[in-house]
Image (cartoon, rainbow, N blue to C red; front, side, top):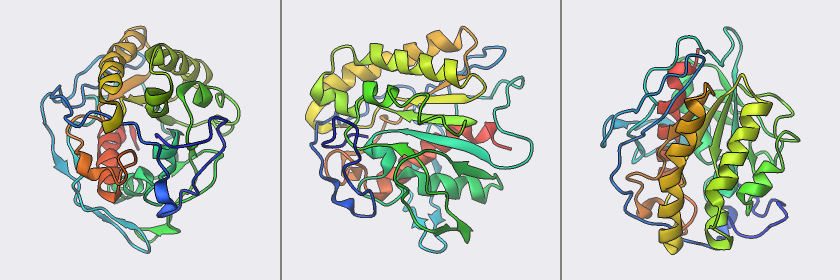
Length: 298
């Protein structure tokens, strides 16, 4: 997500491959503090809470080659460890019985995919497709990514804008971000706040989550902490530590919210420019997202 520029939210990089991630880095801590893998708090109609595999559990080495035509062959350093937030609530099913499940990638330049064309969305599409799930991406921002993955047209939509803070992302909800109502929202936000104004970032994130819950009550909201930003290690550590409780508080009240740990075990060697992931880093992110949502897909 992090990204340089555009505090007004205009998309700075052309995300495309390379897009030369002009990063105004702000770093993050490199050690993903051990914590439980993806301690994902999930909730649904019956508001079940689960913490998925603590420790480095499920290393589902997704050594997939999302390739097909111009696809992303993901050197699976993306060990999709720690993934889904446990078993989904059987009373909650966000995806339709037929047709594609609509996924909204929401965030900043890391969601846009600066540094690797299509970002984590390429490998995520591959993982879902290889398991027989029909998914598509929604969003109103500049389309990017390969034309084809695994011989299928790649949905190039997303809602990631370079340089945006949590508040700027919130300003896009419900319009234009939810113009096409998603079934699942993947939220990775806060990197730009870490070097602009980390104070109160968790409060702003909570408000954004609440807005998503209110505007998309039938969607699964998947909230992650942020990946390492070596230049702002302390603010990142403080911010990330507060996110699981934000999610748990809302899940315990029946909201369809899940926490995913994108920070744990993320090596700084998979940050192409100190801020944005390289191909392997985006594949790692995809594995974590997929672990969290796979049980909800049809």
